[in-house]
Length: 86
Image 1 (cartoon, one colour):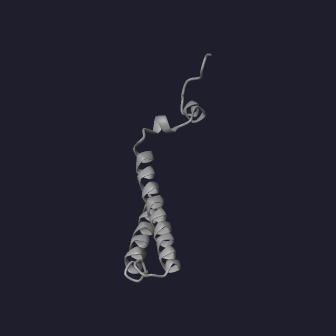
Image 2: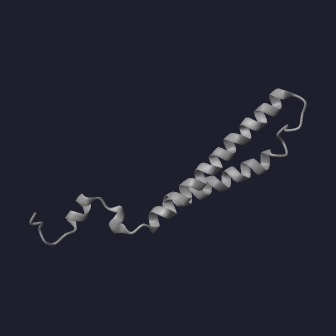
Image 3: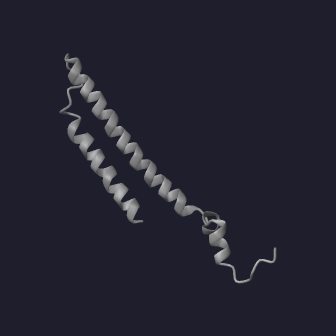
Protein backbone atom coordinates (compact mmCIF):
# COMPACT_ATOMS: atom_id res chain seq x y z
CA UNK A 1 0.00 0.00 0.00
CA UNK A 2 2.87 2.35 0.76
CA UNK A 3 4.30 1.90 -2.74
CA UNK A 4 0.91 2.61 -4.30
CA UNK A 5 0.73 5.88 -2.39
CA UNK A 6 4.21 6.81 -3.56
CA UNK A 7 3.36 6.07 -7.19
CA UNK A 8 0.11 8.04 -6.95
CA UNK A 9 2.02 11.04 -5.58
CA UNK A 10 4.57 10.78 -8.42
CA UNK A 11 1.74 10.51 -10.96
CA UNK A 12 0.03 13.63 -9.61
CA UNK A 13 3.34 15.49 -9.61
CA UNK A 14 4.02 14.49 -13.23
CA UNK A 15 0.53 15.59 -14.32
CA UNK A 16 0.96 18.93 -12.58
CA UNK A 17 4.37 19.39 -14.15
CA UNK A 18 2.95 18.79 -17.63
CA UNK A 19 0.00 21.10 -16.99
CA UNK A 20 2.31 23.84 -15.74
CA UNK A 21 4.78 23.54 -18.60
CA UNK A 22 2.41 23.00 -21.53
CA UNK A 23 1.59 26.70 -22.06
CA UNK A 24 5.25 27.61 -21.67
CA UNK A 25 6.71 25.13 -24.15
CA UNK A 26 7.39 26.56 -27.61
CA UNK A 27 5.53 23.91 -29.61
CA UNK A 28 4.44 26.10 -32.54
CA UNK A 29 7.54 28.25 -33.02
CA UNK A 30 9.62 28.41 -36.15
CA UNK A 31 12.80 27.42 -34.30
CA UNK A 32 13.33 23.73 -34.87
CA UNK A 33 15.57 23.28 -31.83
CA UNK A 34 12.89 24.65 -29.49
CA UNK A 35 10.20 22.47 -31.02
CA UNK A 36 12.46 19.41 -30.87
CA UNK A 37 13.21 20.11 -27.20
CA UNK A 38 9.49 20.48 -26.47
CA UNK A 39 8.57 17.22 -28.18
CA UNK A 40 11.34 15.28 -26.43
CA UNK A 41 10.43 16.83 -23.07
CA UNK A 42 6.78 15.89 -23.51
CA UNK A 43 7.75 12.37 -24.59
CA UNK A 44 9.78 11.88 -21.40
CA UNK A 45 6.95 13.30 -19.30
CA UNK A 46 4.46 10.91 -20.90
CA UNK A 47 6.92 8.06 -20.34
CA UNK A 48 7.04 8.91 -16.64
CA UNK A 49 3.25 9.14 -16.43
CA UNK A 50 2.89 5.79 -18.21
CA UNK A 51 5.41 4.09 -15.95
CA UNK A 52 3.64 5.33 -12.82
CA UNK A 53 0.29 4.15 -14.16
CA UNK A 54 1.84 0.76 -14.92
CA UNK A 55 3.25 0.48 -11.40
CA UNK A 56 -0.12 1.35 -9.85
CA UNK A 57 -2.07 -1.10 -12.03
CA UNK A 58 0.53 -3.84 -11.54
CA UNK A 59 0.42 -3.37 -7.78
CA UNK A 60 -3.35 -3.70 -7.76
CA UNK A 61 -3.18 -6.80 -9.97
CA UNK A 62 -0.65 -8.45 -7.65
CA UNK A 63 -2.80 -7.63 -4.63
CA UNK A 64 -5.80 -9.34 -6.24
CA UNK A 65 -3.94 -12.62 -6.84
CA UNK A 66 -4.68 -15.37 -4.40
CA UNK A 67 -1.93 -15.82 -1.82
CA UNK A 68 -1.59 -19.52 -2.62
CA UNK A 69 -0.80 -18.81 -6.26
CA UNK A 70 1.61 -16.04 -5.37
CA UNK A 71 3.62 -18.28 -3.01
CA UNK A 72 6.48 -20.43 -4.26
CA UNK A 73 6.46 -24.17 -3.67
CA UNK A 74 8.99 -23.86 -0.84
CA UNK A 75 6.80 -21.32 0.92
CA UNK A 76 3.79 -23.58 0.48
CA UNK A 77 5.67 -26.57 1.99
CA UNK A 78 6.63 -24.55 5.06
CA UNK A 79 2.95 -23.90 5.80
CA UNK A 80 2.03 -27.62 5.77
CA UNK A 81 1.41 -29.36 9.05
CA UNK A 82 1.92 -32.94 7.81
CA UNK A 83 5.11 -34.19 6.17
CA UNK A 84 5.35 -35.34 2.58
CA UNK A 85 5.67 -39.10 2.07
CA UNK A 86 7.01 -38.97 -1.45
